Every structure is written in structure tokens, then in C-alpha cells.
Image (cartoon, rainbow, N blue to C red):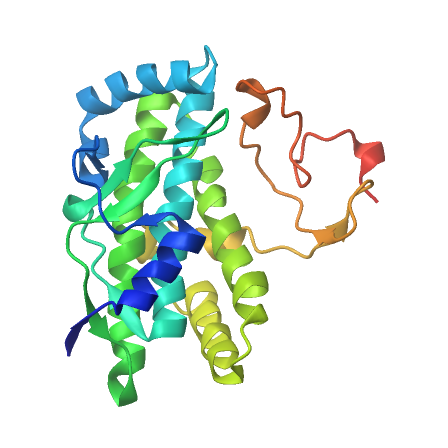
Length: 255
């Protein structure tokens, strides 16, 4: 059954997950445009300036980091909490370039805010179809960015994985509704262990591949899952240094 986001639902996604409710008069880049090699090559050159780097590899890596957040967190949250599968057709999903301070931080605009109700006996089948389409669309973008920026696909998929883990393990576990937490656990388990590798266009499910035990890094007050690949944020402007879960941190810093 088709439905739409309620006003309060749209407002929540806008406040917490950078989903724009309106984008009139703003520059918009559809996610499907990133599949065009010529467009992507030109866009990465512009992005290198935005990020303060000479490295196309770093630009491609950081582009996928932003896309990974915007393309998976809002729709997976809506599926678990609002019980609605957003229309994530990449032809109608747009990056809207913006900055937060010194950071290039695009937002997401959905041209079509219709959704499919996720409830009742058909919920599991509808969620599977939704997840396949979502990660299948990302797979095409991952391949395009990997080719254009010479970034291994494993690096790009781990960026997506990090946000999926954060959403299900942290953010959704803070929901006060125990039914939402239960649904989130089911969704996470399905994506990790039931969604086939073909949904990602890979030989193995990349979200399962990077799901390793957490450990404690020196200087951190929490356990972290040490990444298996590097996001290259230290090669962009702002002198960020290493991320707290970066595998390139000196080994003596990891306990």
C-alpha cells in the first residue's frame, strides 16, 4: 500500500539525517548522474577543490562517504521506525551541495516522497525488495566511483557499512519503543545474514564482510570497530588526522 511521509516524519529526517524537505532554486545532482563517467570525472575535479586535496582517490573516497550516509541512514531509519519504505529511485534522489563550517556536507532531496507501507504479513517480503533495490542502486555508484577515482570497491563499501552499523547498533537502540528496537534488530540481522551478495553486485555481502568485533583504541572512551580499510580523510583539508577507528593509526595506539 502506497503512502507518504507525515509532516512530523519528514521534519525528523530533516533535523537528524540531512534530508531536505524543499530544494527550490538550489543546485541538485541526481545520484544516477554519478553513473555517467564523464560527469563523474568533472565532478570529482570540483570536489577536490571543495575538500582541499589534490588526490582524486581521496575525493572519490569522501564522496562515497557522504553518499553512504545519505543513501542508507534516512531510508533504513524510516523502514524501522515509521514502517515506510521510501522511494529511493536514484533518478529522483539528489545531492544538494552545502557546507557546514569548513566541511563539504551535502544534503539529500527526494523528488518523490511516496513510500510503501511496511506492515503486516507482507512486511518481510517488502523489506527484502526495498533492501535489494537500495543496495543495488548503491552498487552501481560504488562501481562508478571506484573506476573514476581508482578507489578499491572494498574501501567504498566499508564506508556504507560503517553507517549501517551505527544506525542499527547505536541510534536505533536509543529508541524508547521496544517494538522499534526489536524491528531494528530484525532488519539488521536480515541485511547482514540474509541479503544475498548479488544484491550488492559482489561475491560476498560486504556488510557482513566488515562486521568484526569491537575493540578499544587508546584515547577513546568507547569500544570501536577498527576499520579494515582507510577513508583517506587525513588527505583532505582541515588537518583532521586519523579517524578514531582508522587502521592506519600506529599500532601502539590500539589495545
